[in-house]
Amino acid sequence: MNMNEYDAIVVGTGISGGWAAKELTENGLKTLVLERGRMIEHVKDYHTAHLDPWDMDHGGRPTKEELKRQYKQNRTGYTTDRANSHFFVDDIEHPYNEKKRFDWMRGYHVGGRSLMWGRQTYRLSDIDFEANEKDGYGVDWPIRYAEIKPWYDYVEEYIGVSGENLGLKQLPDGIFLKPMELNCVEEVLKEQLQEKYTDRLLTIGRVAHITEGTKEGLGRVSCQYRNRCMRGCPYGAYFSSNSSTLPAADKTGNMTLMPNSIVHEVMYDESTQRATGVRVIDTETMEHYEYRARVIFLCASAIASTSILMQSRSARFPNGMGNDSGELGHNIMDHHLGVGASATTDSFRDKYYIGRRPNGFYIPRFRNLDSGTKVVDFIRGYGYQGGGSRSNWSENIQEYQYGKAFNEALLEPGGWSIGMGGFGEFLPYHDNKMTLDYEKLDKWGLPTVTFDAEFKENELNMRKDMMNQAAEMLDRAGFSSVSTFDNPGGPGLGIHEMGTARMGKDPKTSVLNKYNQVHSVPNVFVTDGSFMTSSGCQNPSLTYMAFTARAVAHAVEELKKMNL
Image (cartoon, rainbow, N blue to C red; front, top):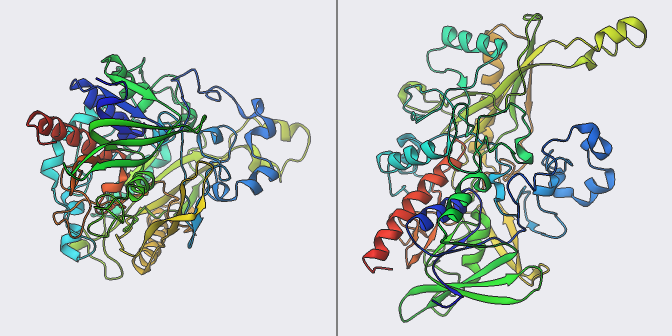
């Protein structure tokens, strides 16, 4: 085998890329894994994992100059914090364009956003897989829950997910480690929802955190309740590519990992109607390379993978590889958030909690599940994530400015508060899209992305209900000082961008088939958020993992049959 030839190529090392690398190498395929960003070694390169605010300049906060320079990243509210800003891209070094606001938060390094993700881990249900067909938005999913269930089981067992089974049709049960515990005010809300409502309940969030035993990888042990996950976990307590799937791939001896390698084109052979490999730019030397393989997995993220396909132009594909339908780059989705309510209580002054639980509660979707839960103002639905906590001593500053009373107040926690924010479904609108601007190039001479996407009437109507229902639940549960909030921001803020190369039954209206293969180039697979046909209201990362594992299994079988 030539040094530039492999059985398989994986582009990207995030949640999808790590899984593709693991599954391909464990099936015996010599696999080249390409990452455009720098190397990040597990534990060694988590430089802020053990730092407190006083260990960092300015208490960990960015300066005014940094905020001004990083205008887009600063809109997110946290990606410019010193504790984790090194894991998010620099706006100036990696520019993009907006016709409408889009918060594109990226992590260009080995592990991608698997290091910074929120770790909420939920399955889609048949309610989600059937939604497009039933209400006419987008195209029908080419699969149903029964087909992906074994793969949900497979990845959950491997990564370690804590939570509780509920028996809900809208939120399928899974294979869970013991759940984390609710605190006292969250338990009150849970009990009151059970008493006051028949259509909604509260549970601890399902998260990819080990709560008992160990999991495969680099020393993966139980969560230490530090809540510093976005900095990288030295204990491997939450799932990431760096602690789990990439080490598994490396262990096989079949993986070649190359950071600092920007894939910008998939090569195509018109005579065989197959992809032959990829073109790469070394980010440090600016040298160009070609690597060849029998099968290619694009796992670079929804925007990046679709950008690669768009740049992969040929006589056969003048508008981008696999774009016979014209859908490439269209149907951008995310989840809309930043809306909900909060409240306080004077109870439980004698109680506190242990540690910093890296999780909150979850209220599963309860709208538009059936005729009994149907509302008229919008279709689809939403869930809530939230939590209760004790405020700090700062509430006492107005009362105790100096002296003994002030000193004593510093040692006492404040009162309890509780809040919840909604995560709502974002419909697949064809005119929500990304394009490439060949007039505005980046430092490597590649076109920049332009976003033209927005929330529409259905999302805005849903938000009103998300806010009102949150307030109603807190009020009926007996909490005080209920206040609402609605800060819509723009698409991208949920960091769940998806849909730009959707799968479907018909090549005329979709880019990928049911196995994540490009319809017209079957040895190219796309298994990151690009393939999503609808968004649901659940955090999508688990779905990406399950579909990736399933796609690799199909690719391996097709390779054995000499179909690829």
